[in-house]
Image (tube, rainbow, N blue to C red; front, side, top):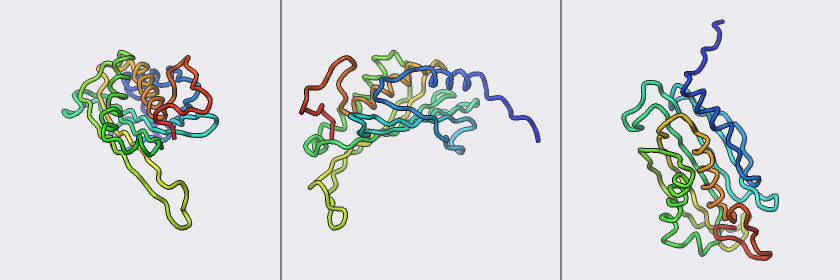
Length: 190
């Protein structure tokens, strides 16, 4: 059996950057299996956002690396994310929600100086009503954010912190250092 081939330096540095950044305490990260067919090298993290020990949002961040590059990526590295959270019904029904959700991502990248290009994605808002054996709350709203972007270099610590800020915004967490008032849920909270 041949010894494993070491990943390219660019990919190794990018993974190290993702592993080195520390999220806020409400965000729990774990390394998970990455898709094998999207690029020659891949790494993935899953996240759970907790409020009072309840999961209020979740997400996945996947790092793809193709040393040959991709024209659509405009580079050799690509970050792909999926974030989802349950929202209050009135917020989930707001027609402005998709635009707000997109700015959660772009503002987080800008705030962390996570330089990027070729960004794109979708924001999906859904409303569900449960019946019969699944009966529950009269209606439930959700937001899903799917996006990808190309970092301009392999220092990905700022990108991870931006992704964590996106998770926090989607979950309706107050900014770091701010405590929510008892009995009130932050915007985006279910």
